[in-house]
Amino acid sequence: MVSKAQEQIGKLEMLDWLRYLPLTLSGMLDTTTYVVPKGPYFAKLRSQNWRIGDSLFHFKAPWSNSTYGSEQHRNTTQNLSSGRNDILNYSLRHIDEAIMPNHRWQCSAYHYRRWYFMAPWFSGYRARLSMSGTLYGHVKEDFTGSSFFHPRVFETAIADFLSSRYGFEKIDREARYRGPLSWKIIMISPTVQAASFEIFDGQGSEITKHVVFPASHDRFVCISFGGLYQRDMNYDQTPLINLLESIIDSFTLEVGPTMQAQWNEIKSYCPNMSLTAEYGELKWPIKPESVGNSVEPSPKVAKNNVLISSQNKLN
Image (tube, rainbow, N blue to C red):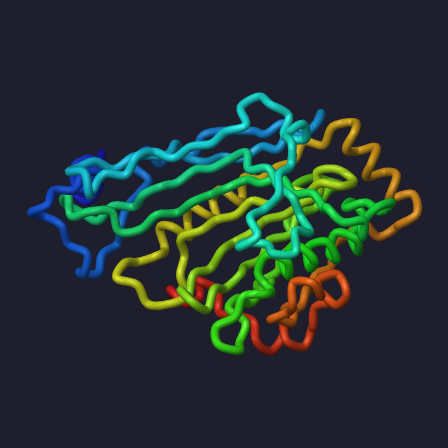
C-alpha cells in the first residue's frame, strides 16, 4: 500500500508542473528572494550524438526550453545542432581579434543548448546553464607533423589554446582569468581520453567548465558549460551543477576505424597514451605574441591555489 507520506510527495510533484511553469507574470516578478530554482522544464535526458568522421560521440541532455511572459520576460529557445553532419567536414573560421588577438586558432561552432531554471509561482527565471560544442584547429605551424592523440602534444596544445584565449586579459595589472583548475581525466572510451577543467573569471566570478578531447591528428573538440559562479547568489546552484554533471557522466566516444588507426599510429612509438593526472595552473597574464614560447604550467601553483569547486562551495 502507498503510505500517506508517499501520496503527499506524489501530489507535490504533480503540482510542480504548475509551480515552476516557465511563465513570468510582471506582478509576481521577484529577483531578490533566495530560492531553489527548478529546471529545465523538460528535464528528461535524451540520447544525442555527434558524428566525428566514422566515430560517434554519445551524450544525454534535455531539450532546451523557452520562458514565456511579456516581451521583457520572454526568452526563446536557442539551439544549434550538427544533426547528422560530420563535424570534421566543417570549415574552420578565424576567431574574433577581441577574443583571440594572436589568431593562433580557428574554430567551428556546431552545437549549442541553453536551459532555464525557474523560481516558483511565475516569479521569473533565476538561472540558466548553457552547453556548447566547438571544433578547434591550429593556424600556425607549431604542431605540424605532430598529433593531438599524443598526450604530451595535446597537453601543450591545451596550454597554447587557453593562453591564446584567456591569458592576455587583465584587471589592472593582474590576470582576469585563472586556469586550468580542477583538472580531471575522463575515460570516454577505452583508448581516447578527455580532460575536464575549469576557467575562473575574476571580473564576474563566473566558472566555465570545459571538456576537451582530440578528434583527429590536427583537430580537437571543446565542450563548454557556462552559468555557474564562484560567489554567493540569490539562488541555489545545485540543480545546475546536477544537470551539468549528469550530462558529463553520459559522455561516451564510440571510436571508429579512422580515429583508432590514428591513435594506434601514435601508440606504436608512445607506450603511455594517458593524459597527465595533474595539470598546473598557467602563468597569466601573458602577451598574445608570447604564446607558444612559454606556456608551460606550474604544478606548484596548481597544488597550492586551486579554486574551491562550485559543488564544495555550495556545501
